[in-house]
Image (cartoon, rainbow, N blue to C red; front, side, top):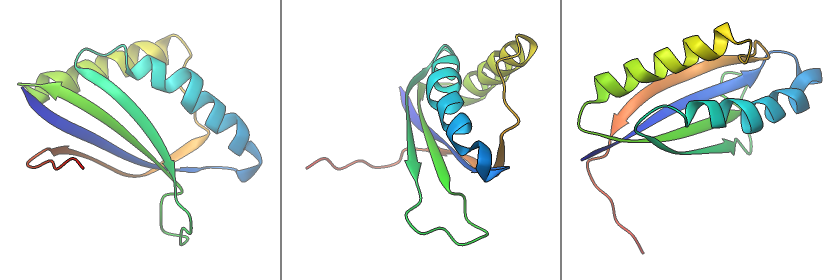
Length: 108
C-alpha cells in the first residue's frame, strides 16, 4: 500500500480570528477530513518565524492507498458534503497545497 502526505499551508485571514480558526481546524475540520477513506492521520504545525509570504500553519494529512486519485476524489467529496452542511470556514487562506508520495523512511 502506498503512503502519501497531503501538505496544506494556511494563514489566518484576520489575526483577530486566530483562536476561532485554530479551534475550527483542530476540532471540526480535522475530524471531518479523517472521515475520508484512506486518510489515517492529521497533524498541525505552527511556523516559528514566518516571513510575510510564508504559511503560518501547516497541516499534514497522512494517506494510505494504492490509488491516490481515488483517495483525493474522496476528499473532495467529503469537503463538498461538509461545505453543504455548513462545516467549512472562510477564516483561513491557503498558501500552499501539494500531495507527496513517500519514497523513503528511516526511523530512529
